[in-house]
Length: 472
Image (cartoon, rainbow, N blue to C red; front, side):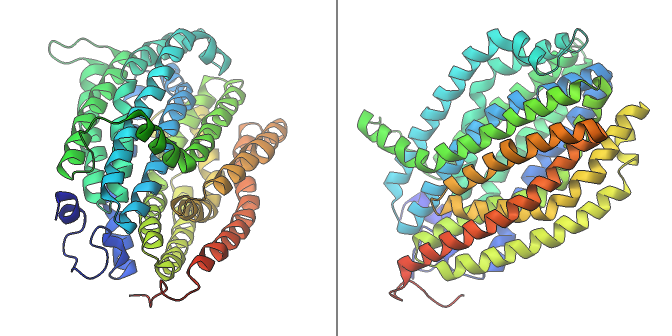
């Protein structure tokens, strides 16, 4: 038995598929044990963004507005990488369910090469377009110098993003969320330590402010790059065999069958986000700063929902590959119950601290007011957001990414943007925020209908009774 067989599935007996640890054992325990490490990982990552925002806020409202302006472009790059990673996770989890180890190794390596090529291209496009692009997003003479300081450094460190993000997807799909979480946790800790050193200066390191924030991020990304490669090699999830061109193209096709629509979905978010940023920028730097604070708080609040989503993919893929659709249905029901209960609970908690929490970052009354409005309006949709994305995670893992793409494009482009544009003339920034819960109420109806239809189709693949077993 190879390292991948033993490392990925410790403790499994020879009965069943030893490569897929999630196809046996109590479902609730699997979801919990897989989700908790990812919760810690996302807490570390989003916690870093929270702390990073705090440090930048100490430089001033203009710097805080500038770091908020970088969000759509940073999100676009991470979204593309994450989208390809969704394709990798889908192929890997289903392949493990069927026991195709060598094919998985080849797919992961080829996908890393694809992701590296994509972000390298984005770097060469991004560097010369910083000024016109961010001016279009709402940058002005006060914020653009800070945006420029940050983005030049960030673009040069772009290649180091690919391996940690996509490697984490592959490791998580193999059922080892503890190892995957280390990639995010260790790099986030490094970033938090480096941030004040490079932003404010320490010892021989001068005060670099926005450049320092970007340098700290790039160094942490390089650190996570090294960790990801080490884990992938230790688990024998990658191969050193030089790929043949036709094999590489075949791998890309498999990954992009799911990853392509997932990338399209991920691209929609930052593009629409960029338009929203331009709308908010018309109300001033204080509005952008308040929105930046609230969006960081939201990241922390959504961590358990995101953790369930990332767990649902590998669990669904492995059990589908092993013919255990009974377990898929049971896991989805558990996941939906959790996100509904958590979503409603955290919305109430955020409402209680909606004024106090923003005041920790900025004392400006307008900044606090905008952040408070966001935190009172948007969280009422968290339960619905969680349900939508949990079902979508399951469909992606099954190899059905197009519903996610269509649903999100329709919600963002045909519902959210027009609503935000109309409501801003009535309620200002609060109207823009109100478009989010309205859009998701409509989306969950369509998502549930599509999910039910596809699951009936998938269940039909196992009607012979040989693959359907009693839930363990």
